Image 1: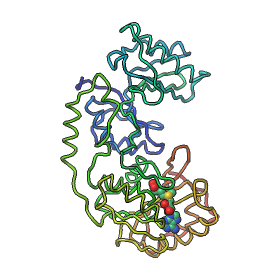
Image 2 (image 1 turned 60 degrees about the vertical axis):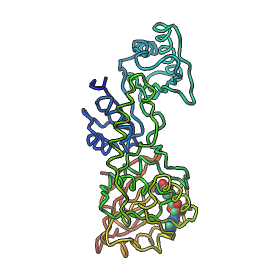
Image 3 (image 1 turned 30 degrees about the horizontal axis):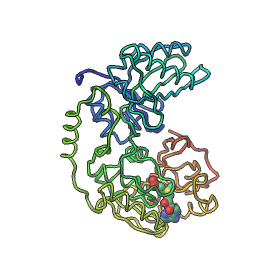
Image 4 (image 1 turned 90 degrees about the horizontal axis):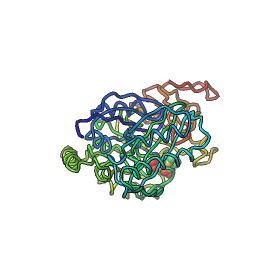
Length: 394
Ligand SMILES: C[S@@+](CC[C@H](N)C(=O)[O-])C[C@H]1O[C@@H](n2cnc3c(N)ncnc32)[C@H](O)[C@@H]1O
């Protein structure tokens, strides 16, 4: 089984497809193609395990089982019934079918879900004379179906819990961003563990904890379980060899490299708890204070943050008053730094009165956001006035 080339799809937060494709290439995937919302690739079962353990950006890894053109629910049923599901799992295991669609002409996705479930159960009835039971809460086996206008694709989920659940987050804080979104932003920002990193609005610490794991070369999934362990194809030896290999490359934290601050004492409590679970207490220097009063922790480095924004938290008037002051702070105290600010507030550069050197469209769930990059050099370009140019994306 291990030498067979299999097809996969790795969904990710929208906007991170290109950096996920780069990451998958580094991990040894082939036939990589970034599409909207994820990346398709091929590889062996061993690669599937590796990507589940090592990808910092994918939300999950789906194994492509079949693909067929369809016009109605009967065609989808036939495609699902044609699969030898008994080669992948047993009828004693519980199943769940999850359908998602884009430009699908069918009226009811619930009906499609039911028909795929029927097809899988009918196939087991035919092959094993018994039917698997549905468990929508904690199934052993998740069958993911994707329908576009003409093609249905059936996948087996190999991850189980989404991959952004690394296991270190016990304390959520206020409006945390997802771990894989934070890791993707660090990759978009081209952060490398030789550059000083500072998140002055760290909340529960997502950016800096992900950075600490990267700096320590800890595989994000090293401590968790995966759905592929429940498939009949599971090779325990391949997984244990991989865990041993990944453990062997871990290195200790480099003190003074990563800094985090927040003005809220609860945020500091939260990040301390999370750092402790992530085994990264020594990797991050913590400060409590208002970002407007804090000085840069080094001569140069990369500042990354997601400030509160109107419709999730924070009072819009307070933020309007805060941003010009923060823009001044960046200009006066962060010469030599590059700031990456992730926000849903598309007017942020105008409010800061700074011209971004780059703006990358990204989605935080359904919310359209930007990652703005500001290069803080002496005499950084000031925006003339905020009422300003409409945002241009590139
Ligand atoms: C959107 S949350 C950051 C979430 C964080 N990235 C995470 O994943 O948990 C914004 C944080 O900014 C902090 N904050 C707001 N205004 C601040 C200020 N003026 N100085 C320092 N921290 C501030 C809040 O306490 C909050 O923890």
